[in-house]
Image (cartoon, rainbow, N blue to C red; front, side, top):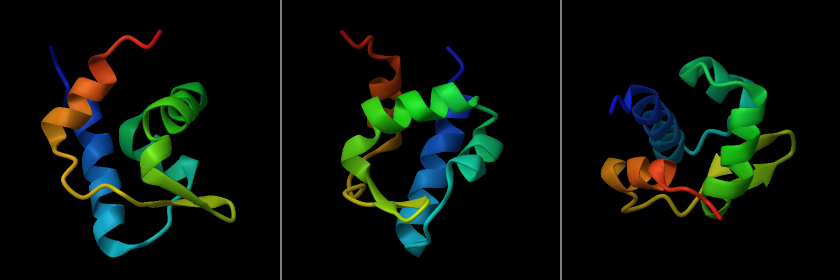
Amino acid sequence: MDHSVTRKAWEFLYDHKCSGKPFTTEEIKKATGWSDSTVRTYRTKKWRKHLQKDGRAYRVVGFDGFALEDFIALHTQVSN
């Protein structure tokens, strides 16, 4: 299975974690090519433990030790 887009999302979030720079949903959409609804779903269901609201943007928190392989596994799990 091709996980290239999921890898782009992980790299985007990892880079923002390292820099401490906030980002908008538009920026991650541009980086991944995902739609509004996909980013919104992942933001609320998959990434909620790793994001902190900062005005109209988000900051990555709690991403230390979150390996790419674990991120891919999170996105391939079916939520109930």
